[in-house]
Image: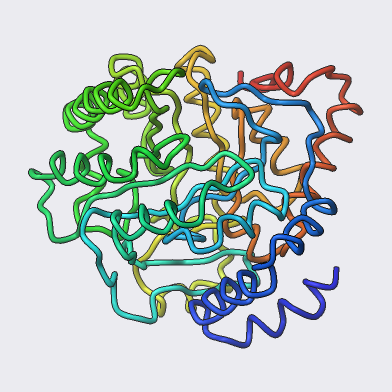
Length: 370
């Protein structure tokens, strides 16, 4: 309540990207002492469903922070203290890149939404690896999201992804392959079945080699792929077939959308002035849930799905779980709801689970997928 009534209005007076950078800096400064992080963690961390086993990893709760919020891994320990069961950093690329020109992040407060065309602005995979080596792992599962360098043509994407993959592999609990951002030219071409199969097979081969060389007792690092919400049913079916063929461990559904149909007519002028970019937040909620439901049905529940898109509260998260998601992620919802978002969603999910008569969270997954 304090965040929404006091802090958010102040932050929303700043340009969106400036506010984001300020919030990250303030968070890392205020919670730099380990004693402060422990104090915050005692108030925010939750384990309402016991340990959750997902793709050979153990999660304290199902609520994670999506890639994009902490691209360069500068605040993972502080964010983990806020109660997230997992943090996904990135998207990082092999080559450092500045991204698209500013302004490139826009708020739509009346829609509880964001539009971004940041273009994978990040310091590069090597810089992230150095930072993680120095800071150590957070007190939760750590995912790393990798994408294609803008300077590299789609035809040369595999060596570029492999270069990033090799650098960050020792530091990740799981790795997400981003082939669905709308802000890197032609990137979404990699969602085609033939291109995606070649990319994932190359990464899995290298994954096994690196994991064996590192002596990982749990086997290879889990590999996930992040897909767009703008795919048709036939395209989703092909992605499920690719996932099976390449033995990936999960699908993150979904990235931002290029569609604008779910926006109120009053927003049309503002959105038109903003121009291109990926839309996230409340207008994406229904479509991302549809994609989750389709993927769960097409895979017969055999592929782990992380649901993301328009989650602001426990009811939104519950919708994703009932559609087939085993875990959920926030980004825009975290910006609008504030520091207590993960705690509040976990507490709310526990209440809903009890009210609906399920004994475990796993029992609820996909219960409304048909």
